[in-house]
Length: 504
Image (cartoon, rainbow, N blue to C red):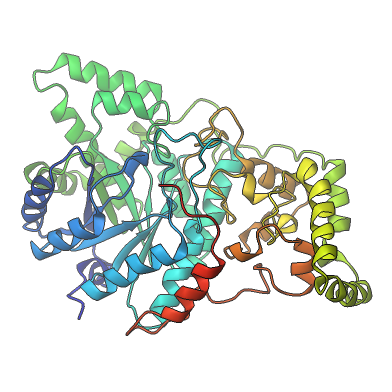
């Protein structure tokens, strides 16, 4: 039986609340984390704690174990579940463990790419992206597991494709079943305001927690370079924090805490549901931030003018002129013609009959796959996944993304460059720009299900026409499960079809 969920209850009651992030890194002793949890549990306004996993791409303590122990000390956990180096069965086992332990709150994120791993030599698999993970959780919830789902969104993006895709992807997550969202880290009140306006204009009432980080000088310097992924600090703020550190005997601590309190006042004034506190989880300081933010709450607009650190010339949805759409290339136009969904019904019917014959003859099927790959690999970067969704991604292959994402970028790109391969543009920049040129941006909100890995190395044309692939309009439930027990036969079937073992 699950215990009372103070996070859910706070949102239901409409109370401004606080969550504190506990970074379960290997650098922090688990006993220390649990002592902190005991102290935070004594603060009435703190309704829970985020328990991290793979924060910044580094392996840490098991978040389920830490979260279970934190709850035993009175602090409701919000467990980070990532898709890093996991197949869907591994993720399912983690979620079944949470259900068995009575833990409801899950932070569903794609996850930072592991540090020190050469993607080109030893790629790390991502079976799900964050939108698919939310859909997975929703199906488990429908089967009787009462998960309360949170997701991430990063408004602190300063190119048009990065910014707008973050919001498009958030809408996907909400439609998939997300209950609330938590922003990534930034110090730009204009972006906090932008996100709130975007949701309000679309009638989306999903609660959002604003990320408030107590930022020291060294962390500021790293974040100004985009480390960890998804975090960004303007050079002007870095200089200010460095000056504060040098000018005071407390090395800038008082200034950091005051800035955090002012940021809480800002997100509260803008109508956010609460604040997500990170960077310092000492109970006395958390209490001080909460009390101080309440004392200065009436001055939030003044602070919003002060804490507005964005790059010069950065993109703002409600302030920057839209860039002109780029011209569509030759192969993009040709791809539309070659896309099966665009073929007339009589042609599809004839080809379906022909491909059924081909499918019964393995050598013909293999020849078709080789011919398809010979064309699509040099033109689109095809990886022969057998679940082609090129037409839904403006003819950019999702398998060329290091995380194999199918529903939009992760939170890691910085100024349009890939988190994993920072010398290369994020593939989703091309997806957005091509959709914009074709006036199809709204179509990017379509949910794309996970690929069927059993189809790797087979013809996507065969799979499409014979309705074996995984795509919108031909989606199978991600789980066949009851709340009482795992579906063992389904697991055996999956293992029989699974690709090569995961990287260890």
